[in-house]
Every structure is written in C-alpha cells, then in structure tokens.
Amino acid sequence: MTLKNHVILITGAAGGLGSALALQCAELGAELLLLDKNMSALARLSDKLVAAGHREPAICEMDLSRAQTSEFEELAALVDGEFGALDAVIHCAAEFDGLRPLEHTTRDHWDASLNVNLLSAWHIVTACLPHLRASGKGRIVLIGENSAVTKSAYWGPYGVSKAALKSLAQVMSEELEGTGVELIWTVPEPMATGLRARAYLSEDPATLREPAGVADEIIQSLTASFAAG
Image (tube, rainbow, N blue to C red; front, side, top):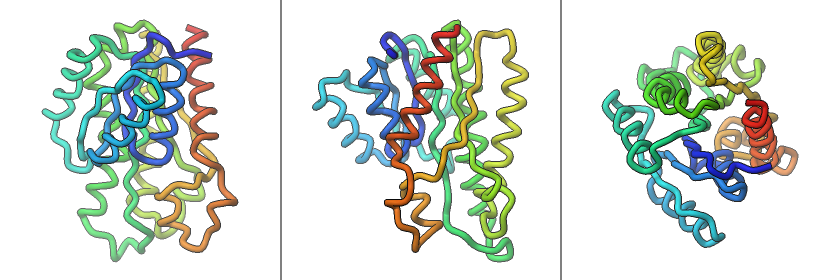
C-alpha cells in the first residue's frame, strides 16, 4: 500500500482524525497540503512529520466557518504553486458547538456548522476540481455521521449539516460519473476525539476507537480506489 507521488489535501488536519490521516498518509509517501484554522497546531504537526523523516507539508491556515470565496480560490492557487497537481481531498473539518434545543440555537451556530460541515466541502471541491480531473484519478473523501446524530434532538446545526452533506455527496457522485473523479463516503465508528467528548461528557474514551484505526480504514479505501483506477 503506497501513496507515493500522490498529492493529498486534508482539511481539519490538526484535529484527531485529520492529524492521524496526515501521519499515515505521510508514512505511505504522500505529499500533503494541510488545512486548519489553528496555525500553531498545524505548525506542531508539520514539525512532527519532519522529525519523523517525512517531507515538510504545505500548510494553509483557514477558518472555514467564515471563509470567503476568494480564500478557496487562493487555496487552489496554493495547490498550483506548491505541487501543480492534486490527487485527493479528504474533508475532515467539522464544527460542533455543543448540544442544545433548537429554540436556544442562534444564527451564528447555524452559519458556523453549515459553512464548515457542508458549504466548505462544496467550495473546496469546486475550487480544486480542475486539479482532480487532471489527475485522472482524483478522489474526494467526505466524512459522514450516523443517523442517531443526524435525526436526533439537540444535535441541531451539526446533525442537519451532516445530513445535508450526505445529500451533497450523492449529487456530487452522480455528477462526477465518467470524469475520472470519484467520491468516497465514509461514516466512521465513534472515535475518541475532542468533538465526541464535547457531546458525551461522561463517556469513557477508552471504550471508543482511536482515530488512528479509523484513519487506517479510510486510507485503505483510498488506496484501493486509486489502484482500481
């Protein structure tokens, strides 16, 4: 299993799943563009990759909850400038601001969740689609959520935006048929991440899967998809 000569963009790269994916992709030889709103965490991750003997990643600080269209255009330009190519986008960025009833949910809560969980996926794919098409084997990986979250009380903007992301994935997948670009939709098992801890305050993280294990499964799906052409 190898990702040598593959350029991969990972959003939410400083988070639990995103950082695990970055480390494992680097171990398999991928060239990385890492995006997150936390620049200091991105820098630490970059240092960790370099210390392990991997190529220094390109990094991009972007707050997807308020990013403008021009910033996504700049992201595509960064891909051009750093690599001149792009083989995969893995959208791990997620916004969850706690459980609350809809009557206590503000417009700001809705805007942040919809922008990060849904609209940024569309923006990034749209901006990077020429590169993904040019790859001849472009792949888009979107991270879903189980129906216990997307259809349940108190999950509000997060649940609704993740449900909408599934619809977006289905539309994208159909529209991309025959282009050489394929979409991989995955719904991970519950993981020991900061997002999960904010929702389940009394849950023992030792009972959950580690992000590294989930990352390994995603990468196996990605490499198998590349191999299948």
